[in-house]
Length: 363
Ligand SMILES: *Cc1c(COP(=O)(O)O)cnc(C)c1O
Image (cartoon, rainbow, N blue to C red; front, top):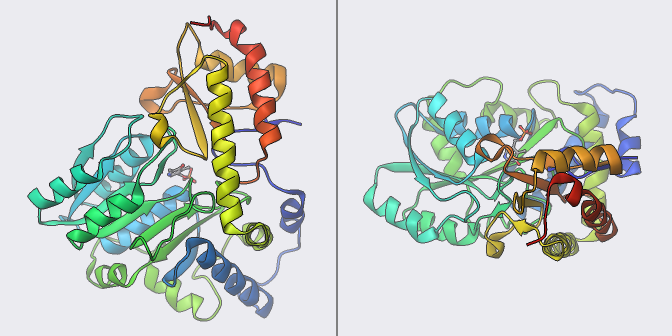
């Protein structure tokens, strides 16, 4: 069997796979009402929030678009804190819906600087919302969200967070950190298949929603809220993915959130130590290296694309390459959701065999 070590979709526990094979039911019937209400409550526990939480059928990008169209009006000034492909995507969505986007760029592989956010907001008081990618999957960096939030809230701006590849793996206390909208996606750390985006909506976000004029239909939060009050979703949901989430959330909560976070911390550390033991170079600043995805730089003649190919063909381990401007410059190991230390050890052992064939010469 292949080991799927990409940053989403991620491997599924057998129980979750089984849950997905259950027959279809009426998505407006009493059985589904109970399931959607239970799943929503369990997601709130993972989000550590009392805010509204909605399950939207779509991928993580759909969740990002939902966040934008619900609170932004054409011409609104938005600050994009950007140091990777996913932050660029988020900014592009905002632009497409008419936002006037200021980019606070930081180097790919580095983390965003909360003080730089503070300075930008001081100089640019008309900014309405700040877009932050908590875990930049393209570079393997986790940004200091708590400190960024402090800076954003000093100026009372909306904080919109892409936590697609971090929520349910890393500690993100949505309410304690005053995050107004936090987006995630079922196929990342949730031990569930693709199909659903989830997001939380704060009171301040609801106020912005009431005035926002960007066009919206499918993603309209008001529709989602009205239907959830009846235990439904406005449109037909990905029922099988909801079944899966019902089971995977039980597993997560049974393990205990703090244990889940500790497991990811240990896995992240094990991965980085393994990479360094092979004399490979981490792409990101290690201080901010992600515990859900590890990016490895091309060094010592290494061909990252050949690493990905050989790992797949010779060891049945599926790694990810680099995205956009990192294409051919890095490879990435996903370690989020259902993952154990032993699996990471297998990856490191296989890499050791593959590296010489992929051009790598130890320093
Ligand atoms: C995967 C990912 C997305 C996009 O999710 P899709 O489900 O592929 O649309 C957005 N942001 C981050 C940080 C991601 O890792």
